[in-house]
Image 1 (cartoon, rainbow, N blue to C red):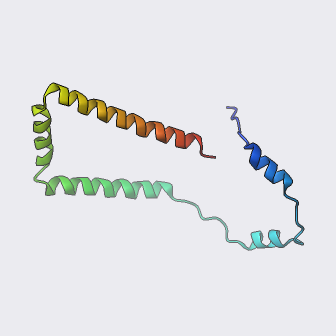
Image 2 (cartoon, helix red, strand yellow):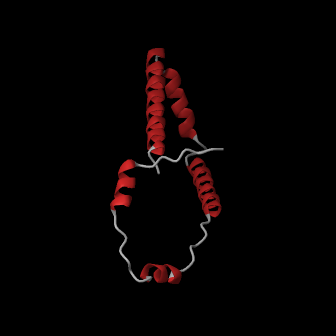
Amino acid sequence: MDEVIYEDPLDRQLREAMPYIDDDGFTARVLQRLPPPRRQRDSLRAVILFGATLLASVLGFVLSENGRFITVAIERLAALPILGLFALALTSGMLVTAVGLLAAIAKSHEP
């Protein structure tokens, strides 16, 4: 798959305009003495976060009288007039769409 790499013109101009300053190999020696990069453990982090989320959800459900607040919220929603329910659904949909749009825009500006 061919990927198009976008190069910022300002970044390119600054890179080309910067003269090289000879440091007699100092940079190379420093880079050689740096410790090797650590391997990231993203999968372990994901498992720990998922486990903590699951545990917190189960604990919250049990401590809230087995989710009684969910049934109360559903009863309140069912008692709303149809116009109020429509307004709530429309507002929620617009909010989710706006958040998704902002996330997509932010993702498109990442290097």
